[in-house]
Image (cartoon, rainbow, N blue to C red; front, side, top):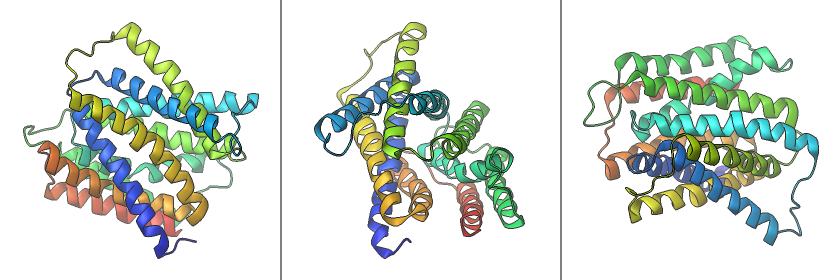
Length: 294
């Protein structure tokens, strides 16, 4: 059960994930999105390999074939696709607005679980929470809000990419619940990260190319931060939070991420927080709170 002791850990994890969105928003101005994601996944995977190598008295590199099969599917559809979609969407949306959309992920997960998990059916309270949360995203999309100071109306492609990312993320959660719930969360995360890197980096190089001529020292710093601090260290802290404080801690983190992403975007990238964004986030958070209570 979550206590006040969990709040510093939740807040710090929210900062890691929120600041990673800000770093990614900055990076799309220097990297091709798929190149950026490929490099980020590769660096995070190396972090996982190093962890298994130097902490091998507790963690052994997984060899179970069933685990590798399902985690590989998860790596492609539940990691490579949504991460690439989110980073590409950051070409059209602010980091704060992207974070608000990401907050709807539990609502989409609950909706998908109703159809694919026999013990996760919707009740009236969950259904109301889903409708309320998704209405927040509809308000934002209908307004054409981008969160960017120099963009009047957002390119609809940004919304479409975020919808793809959230749907694939929700499907990944259902897939884990159905096929991987008995395996170590860290083992699952390591394999999905490793496989995603093996898929994205070669494909990006073949299709897009590998051009880093426009990347500055600040761009490389943002990449390293997103890979090792936001992705790798954030994942370790997320696993720790769930194990120590329970699932509620994981849900609470989602409420904190838009705060740090929004403030970071305003302070560092000249993004904006508008009244319609606040309305959207209130509707989404209210819906997710109702879902969590039920």
